[in-house]
Amino acid sequence: MGTADTQPALETIEIQRFLEGIFQHSGYDFRDYAFASIRRRILGRVAAEGTPSVAGLLDRVLHEPACMERLLLALAVPTTSMFRDPSFYLAFRQQVVPLLKTYPFVRIWHAGCSSGEEVYSLAILLQEEGIHERCRTYATDLSERVLRVAKEGLVPLAAMKEYTENYQQAGGKASFSQYYTARYGRALIRPYLRENVLFAQHNLVTDGSFNEFNVILCRNVMIYFNKSLQARVHGLIYHSLARRGVLGLGKKESLRFTPHEASYETLDLDERLYRKVD
Ligand SMILES: C[S@@+](CC[C@H](N)C(=O)[O-])C[C@H]1O[C@@H](n2cnc3c(N)ncnc32)[C@H](O)[C@@H]1O
Image (tube, rainbow, N blue to C red; front, side):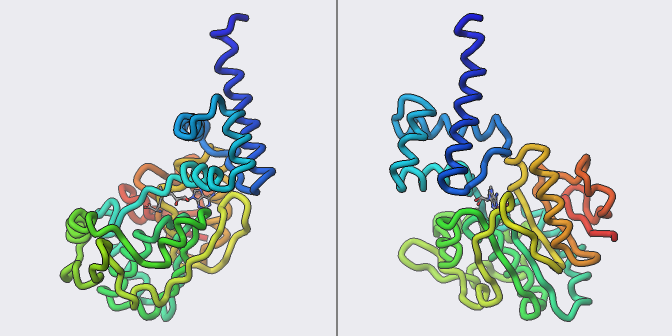
């Protein structure tokens, strides 16, 4: 076999060893993330850190905590925005809020909340719908670094123009600017929107389920997982949802072909909003 044939196979072995090393060293388990995307991110770090190979990068991250932190951030993909995919929030307002209004108390879990933009967007929506007071929100992510940002409630001020448009498309009922104050080039989310929120570290791959949530949002997270990990995490979500609980997935995700497909009815197919049926 020539070099051209063996190269991709060798690279795959190197990446598998890399992910195994990261897991053993740090407990972060990326072994069942979608291969093409995790490969691209690892090779991106090889280039950015200037190491000669994937094996060289492993050596660096094992010995340099700062290098490990940069790697974890790149592998976690913390991209997010306020009222991301505004039509999702519009559908939530129209189809889920009326259900929640019938509950005395609502428990919400944002799984993979990144730096909090999704959490604060939903808090604004719940406030406008008059049910924020009775909601308790758990917002979790694997990355401690993004959670630190989320807890501060600080959002880049430069993004607020785009977020204002998103908010309006999401059916926003007031002036978006009333929900934050400008501070040193950043927007500080009004503290009352943070009062009912608990941010905590939780890894969907290695940590257990919670229970009795009325709503779980896990948007733009499982797209980075392979099929078997998606199935496992769907199991965890299913067991964390209360009877008739609502699940919201990202636009690019779906319940189709997952082991729990039959356990939900569809509330909104386009917006990937589902309700547990049994
Ligand atoms: C692309 S962001 C999505 C953020 C937000 N849900 C949204 O839709 O805007 C993906 C987030 O999932 C988190 N994540 C990735 N793997 C995870 C895991 N195993 N457990 C918990 N969170 C994870 C990442 O740290 C990142 O913040």
